[in-house]
Amino acid sequence: MPGPQSAPFRAPARADLSVTGRAAPSVLVLGSGVAGLTVAYELGKAGYDCVVLEAKDRPGGRNWTVRAGTVERESSGFVQRAHFSPGQFFKAGAARFAQWMLPMDYCRELAVPVEMCAGYRAHAAQAADGADGGRKPVRRGAANADTLGYVHELLAKVSNQDRLDAHLTDTSATSCWNTSAGSAPPATTI
Image 1 (cartoon, rainbow, N blue to C red):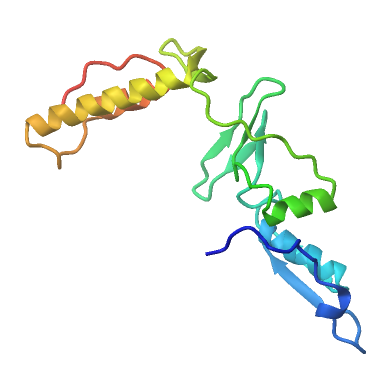
Image 2 (image 1 turned 60 degrees about the vertical axis):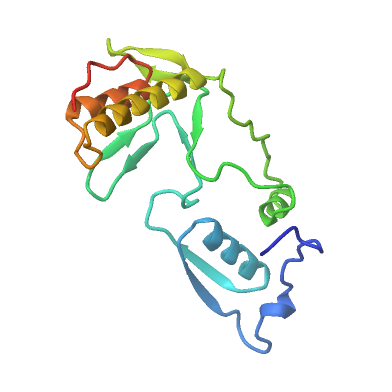
């Protein structure tokens, strides 16, 4: 099982990867996620001529930041647009990496600013769609506690009726969803 590196990372040198006596070989890298960008960067430093192809309209793969106006189009045609207030953002990719991990070396080498990873805080507010269509702040801990309470209520109802394998009604499923958004659930029937 890999652990902290015992020696600092050393990027491959030109001599480690290059073919001597020939022109720079060309490499086609598919995908501009962390792996694809890292391969192209390291091979480029070693003298390779790299071209990176990406299917999406942005680099980063699963690592990206959603800001106001960010649009994501799914293959089904469904389109989502972020409606955030100015200055708000959502880290939709990797949450954090430890100080000893390889990405930190790249952050240092490329002078990428690094932010402290703020952990989960129960008192932090999150926006929730209210029953009236407006948005109101809801404490994260309260939303989680409400969701767990309603899920336990549903489990108690179905287990008392020997119906654990039954499908949830639309009302029951909606009550769990609305609870996490901070609104009170409607009466549930199973």
